[in-house]
Length: 261
Image (cartoon, rainbow, N blue to C red; front, side, top):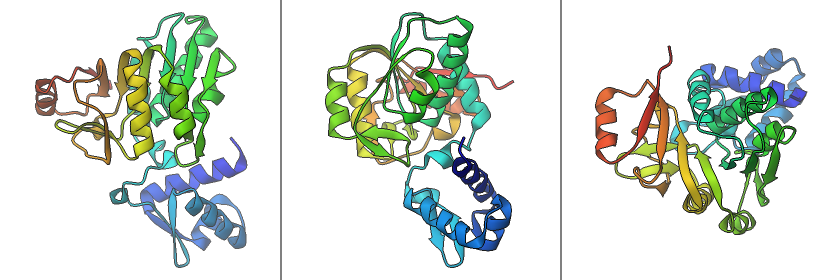
């Protein structure tokens, strides 16, 4: 991790709690001068992960619907790791996989690295539009990075070039994250590009798995990429109430709950 990324993570961790910080607070926290801190704030604002305010910075309000990889990656870390540990059990030697660019899928990539290093999985081919998945996995197996426009806020690629490449793709298993799971609206994401790419890949996959922490249930977002019963399995943590499980399963959703203890 570069100094910039380390400082960014430290600041975003603090903003998760404080919601806003002035220049002097942030300067002391991350150990740089006030002038450098102001430039740092401008960079974060340009990436869409924070908002400049008079004399300081504040976290992007959730109500805006704006997705931030940095923010998402600091939330529900333990739950995402346990969900990913279950997800990796569905992968076999020789599989051709697609991994999307969500933060829970990054945990799956990290779990895959451990299995590959230990020799428990071999001969995987992984297609991904995630820059971070590529960095994690390329040393240990064949990785095909889908080209396209780079989105810093999601650490991935998207756009017409990416879609064209994915239209000719056929994989054994696809692993998606999601921004929201609604009993009527289905599996949802915050932007059109992600929705379109997931729809394309899902149609060309023998099996589709969704890894999503329980916080995503009951939410709504901008775009639907699949009906609730349109994927093979949704893996979540045990934070979802039993009465909600009854509702979703009644709509045809196949859900596996991973215990946290």
